[in-house]
Length: 322
Image 1: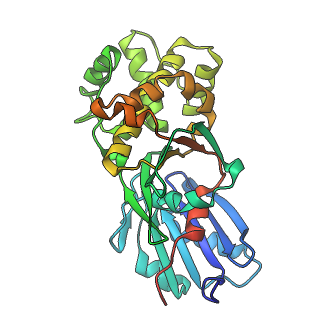
Image 2: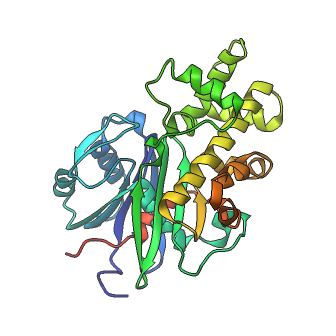
C-alpha cells in the first residue's frame, strides 16, 4: 500500500432521507467518527458536513469521497428525493479537500461489493456465474437505485445507472388494473413510482381504491410489518405486488447490463423481506424474460445486510490523482 493509499479519507453516503459521514483509515481498514444525520434537519449538504466537523475530535482529512443519490457527471448536483442542490467544486474548496471523489450512491454500493464480509450478505440463490462476471446491485429505498461492477485488468470499474426512472410494465391482470388507475394520476408509470418505499405506500393506496376500500395512513414499515404478519389482506397484496414488480425490474436491469456475475439487492426495505421474497413471485418475474429465462434462472442472487454499504464503497473507490 502506497503512502497515498494509506491516507485516511472522509467518506459520506448522502441519500434522500439520511446522510452518513465518517473517516475511513486504510491502514487499519476501520471507520471512525461515523455519524448519521436526518436530512430533514438541515438545509443542505454543507450544513450536514459542518455539523459533523463540529463534533470531530481530530483534524479533518484532506481527502474525501462522497456518494450522493443523484445523477453524476456535472459540477452542479441536484438531488432527486431531497430538495438539495450544490456545486462539487465549491464544496471541495469550502472544506479544503485536496482530492475529492464523487460517486452516485449506488456506484458506491457497487464498489463495496468485493469488500462485503460473509455476514454482511444473505444468499437467496447460489446459482452459477462466470469468473469475473459483471455484478449488478439494485435497491429500493426512498427511490430505486442501481449500478454495475466489472473488473478490468484487476481494477474494479463501477457504472452508475438510474433504473428507478426506467419504464415499468404490468405482468398480470391485477397489475393491468392498477396501472390503469395510476395512469389517471400520473403521466407514466416509471419503476420507482411503485418499487420504492413511497411506491409501496402508493401500491397500498391504489389497491384500496381498486377494491373500494378506505386506505389507512400507513408507512412503508407499517405495510411491510402487517403484510409479513398476515394481519391485513390489503397490506399482504401490496407486498406481494411489490415483490413481483421488484423481480421484473431486477431481471430487466441484469439484462440491460449483462450482469451475469450476480445480483445484489440493497436498500432499507429488502433486508426485511429475505424469506418473503423466496415465497413470493420475485424469482418467477425476474426470470420471465423470454429466451433469457433459463440463464436468469441460474443467476446468483444476494441481499446486502451491511449497515453502511455506501460508506464501504466510498472507502474503497479509487480517488482522482493529486
